[in-house]
Image 1: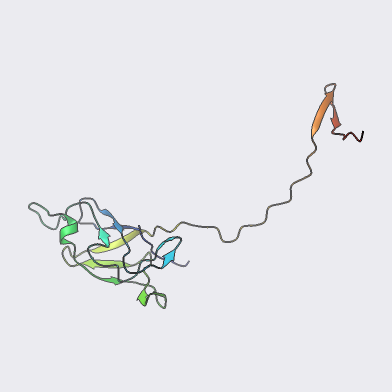
Image 2: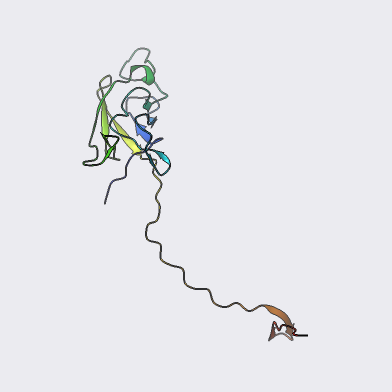
Amino acid sequence: MAEKYVIDGAKIKCSLCTKPEGKLMVTSNQIKLQDKLWATEADKGKPNLMFQGNCTKFSNNPPPCAGVIAPIQWQNTAMGITVDGKKALLESSTIMCATGGVPITIEDTAQKDTPTNIPPLAPLEDVKLVVGVDGPFIVEENKEDNE
């Protein structure tokens, strides 16, 4: 099965953050996939990896992750697929944080599943309009007046 590419707004995770789920913000290009910016290996700075919690690597008075995060380089990027000359990120891509020493992972690529092979619908049967009922079981069909 082919892996999904990562787009702006993807959910990321750091096991050392008190709020481990973060968000990936794309700033490296203006190329879109599913109407969102396409993430690449260049999206690796503090403005790209957004976490709201504190870094538990520091036992006393843990600082906000946003202030101490130090991403190094994305691993497991797409082979042969580049966006503005940078390798595209995949759902299996990870990036090591030099501060915490743990990998930050992609938890949700933000892509939406879209059907690719939709079978055609069967034609509808002709529908007859019922205009009146004589008795409990007799149905009359609509007849146009030609007067």
